[in-house]
Image (cartoon, rainbow, N blue to C red; front, side, top):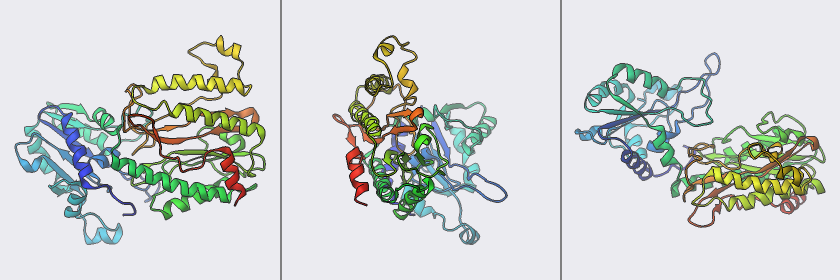
Length: 430
């Protein structure tokens, strides 16, 4: 394994917390993700179901976790099913966990081969009343393929039609929103790796460099440091490309006089960083570019201070909108009288800042957490305001990751340069 695992005590604690939210006499069943095919006999790299990882620590395909806390049979209270290995599998696929290793990593004492799952399921369900199953309920999810957990829902309802089926997703949303010290440490490691990539890119940037050449600098530094790679599709958007929010072609030359918007994060141990920086191709911002840059930076600094207990993201976004209006008026992009007369349901600032400012961060880049829930200590958020001016071929977005505390939030990316003058100084020294 290329990353340092979280101790089993973390997963034991997580399972105990899940059990507190279950109805009496309930069973929880959650499966690993599929390995998705590409074409012919090819397949994509495996990425574990994050809820399963959160509850077990097992980062391996063909894994099933079953919880039955009220079971009258002690060995049925927690069972982990893993893929049985063989000499053939070792030759063709590589090393797989033994039962003892899976138990040590997860803290689950009873580990069986996944081929035993069906034979164990029937007697357990005969004793249970409620069955908690999981599916992707993220509000931004667009799901066009059926997962193992989706197929399990169909199978369970067909086999056990008189049981009461429950949703696990709302419980996971509650628990995963607040991060433990162990999780913050993994996110911080991902941030350290991201910084190494950014440092390399500052040195490599010059007029004529191709966007994907800068992408290559990141991936080299990431993998070298134990990351599996990018937390999400990297955005290396020079000039007007920065005005396309999810530009990922990364195939254009970076021209003298332009600014490059870089939205990149490393993953580490399945936890993610999410950073955005903007740097001048030639090492020097123009006066106008710096004015827009500093306007965005002021908003990021002011908005991040609002990430504290007692406010919801919905309330937070309204306050950030007021900050954005002020800055856009100062830049001459909006007129004060027009803003005063605007339709509150259609604020004018949306022309230049059309996305949200913050989202939860953790095992998913857009991690679980409700925008209606009051912010609590332990939550980790991005703060990423931006101003996009297509007519000027300029897009500026800045993004750091913040840990909510009882008082001021902690900037987990404080070590990554963000001041315009510091960016220029570092680029001039290379």
